[in-house]
Length: 337
Ligand SMILES: [Zn+2]
Image (cartoon, rainbow, N blue to C red; front, side, top):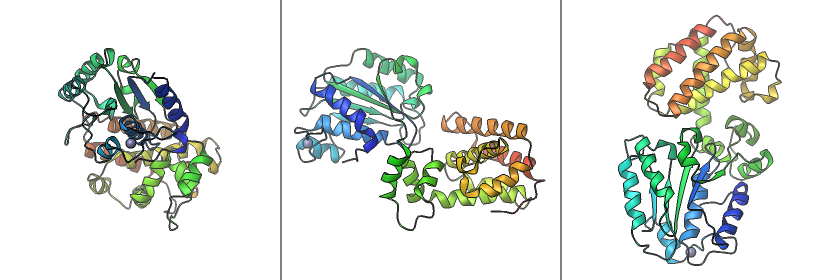
């Protein structure tokens, strides 16, 4: 079973109370940043809705036929909708399959569920088609939409779902959870990791498990080599095209953002990249704040385009940013990290 994180408990208790009162919403919208566990929350909810003997706190028992089928990923009444392999969007044909799924009689005793993620990747016609389901949900049905980009979902969809907002937990709670899971060899402490990942505990853990810290260190070194005129932006771009550009773009945004903060006199302890504060301070002292703001706007716009999977050429996008970085910082004389 998926872990029910301590910072989900309030949402969980509220939904379980609705279930006991037989007022379970037909449509839920789980919204919030990446890395706070929305998908695991949905998996727990689907499990308990399929369970014949839920536990006292509402979670599935893990042993009944419904729980076993759900755990094996073969429960006939539960459907997960993702973009098809090689596609970026969820199509209207996939929503038609949802309609067919919901029209059939339940094979087991629990509610029928459909989990859609990332919900913002539905095409406009898919969203319009889903709207009809949301307006007249058949029988005992729970639709669970998951999104990290709420503003990209049509307002008509948003208004027909009960919204649960998943914020990053309080720092102390996140630290406690993360410290229990970090291997002893971790180079960065939990506070710095959480700062780097926007306070999202699962994302912080992923940084260690996927070794994003080494990738980040490598990327930042390349940026500093560029500024020293010791590297070629076109060559560096080639090294990153095989992977998702989301993290490198995010790192660049936080670096420029930190330089803006330093120019504004913000203390190092409030930086996102506080582990390289000295190097950033040198860069910030020798650059113009207006230029930094312009560049930050450009990086954030490109990051938004990339995350929104709006048709962009990754090579042109990264080359453009690295060339601009070279222009802005090439005259700076500082020591590499
Ligand atoms: Zn069960």
